[in-house]
Length: 160
Image 1 (cartoon, rainbow, N blue to C red):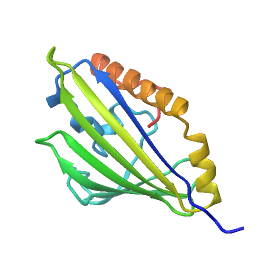
Image 2 (cartoon, rainbow, N blue to C red):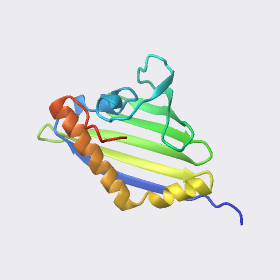
Image 3 (cartoon, rainbow, N blue to C red):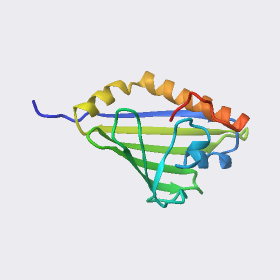
Image 4 (tube, rainbow, N blue to C red):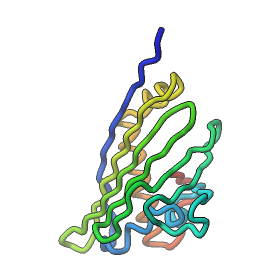
């Protein structure tokens, strides 16, 4: 039976209790380490970890090969960024993040994940990336980010 790639797109908006000017840096490769326990990017380029279009890094998740990330788009003026991520032998993904200040001085962050399978293992991952799972995942992001913004330290159990 030939392989047929599956694809999933999930979008969710989370709410953060700070102005948008304080938020985008928390989604940069090194910035995410501030609030996401277990997030440990290995910077390939630039080695400084500075966020810039074309930056490349890897992450390791248990039981999988390194995921290779590229900061495909980075626009701090518009408070937007996008990643392309590849987990070899499994899936290709895109992550788009947009931060919009709300009238009360807080921020709505819209996060869109797109995954396309590269194999049966990728299709299995996508099958588990349900709308319910994604809503829970984004709720955990919102909790972890607001905890960090309030206390200045990450929640110990949250992983990105």
